[in-house]
Length: 446
Ligand code: PLP
Image (tube, rainbow, N blue to C red; front, top):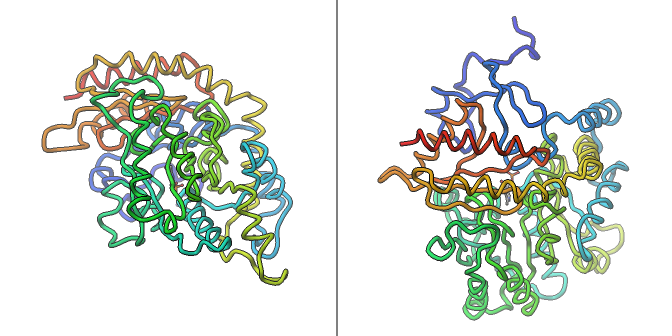
């Protein structure tokens, strides 16, 4: 019998219902990886696969970083678990302080979760609790954006705007509305960095305020750069305008930085990149570089103070009835601390910033390839949008992903868009190799 640690190739793929994957096709043509190191995966058949996606926008320090592996091993051998309600352990406090230092303004408090979806639901709940705490309990409405992705909890799919993630699941949260998305191929195709046109789309928030009245709206949530839909950098001036309008009307602004946090844009976070301080920020992915599941919500001081410090309840009473069994898990905290140290010591945010123009150049060199109708990029996030096959949307990009894997490259696809987000440790040569293989994939694609 095989020992558990020898199981590298499963003999039956049936029982695992794989998320966000065409199970029927995958189980006939599986793409399985067994090991990883640095920029590379190794497939179960021994082939090296270059990771152009940092796993899923998350393995920012590269795979199996020795410092992070050691921290996780040490922590597992020292303290496997501590209850996060009513008790604690020192590393979560250390981590919260370090995160507070990484975020601008008074985004000084961290609430720990285990995923991006949980961070989003947590942020929405904190927003509602805050409005109630300051005597604005009529503000229950939440505003998201078309084509936004905020994970798969009921809160996240309600404010999210990807139709397939919503239409199967009933009426979702009530009292939710959406801003228009910002993709405009007519005016902005093949933009480099932030597109020029579209800041006025933020004014749609004024229209929603006219419709619902500000006194009913608790918060607006957006990804500063829409990621999962296929990399939509915000139009120049758009986020600034959203910040202005929300502040004017007492509406909280939530940045969902699950992808943009931790160096993806060549800065610690999108707040710093765009020079905007939102009221809440959701995090996950790069927080532990995906080595251990973990998320967090960064919260501005006045929000914490209103709910916690100024709670009218007696001091021995819980202020916010929310949390998870694995909030601030010791092994996740140890991993996150090691990852933050790695970002700093290896200057990975600066490295990403230096690589971004090279990435942009190489990515846009694919512009003349067959079926390519747009290329977008910002920081180390890039997208190549393909014309869909008539009557069979998403199939062309899916085929590109399968072909790329056959030829030693892991890419991500969403709809008919190919998304790239290499680990921040990538070299110029890695970027060249990624775009070379992808170029050949596009040449072969029908
Ligand atoms: N929010 C954003 C912006 C994301 O990109 C994602 C995942 O890609 C999530 C939330 C959900 O994160 P998770 O899959 O960890 O729940």
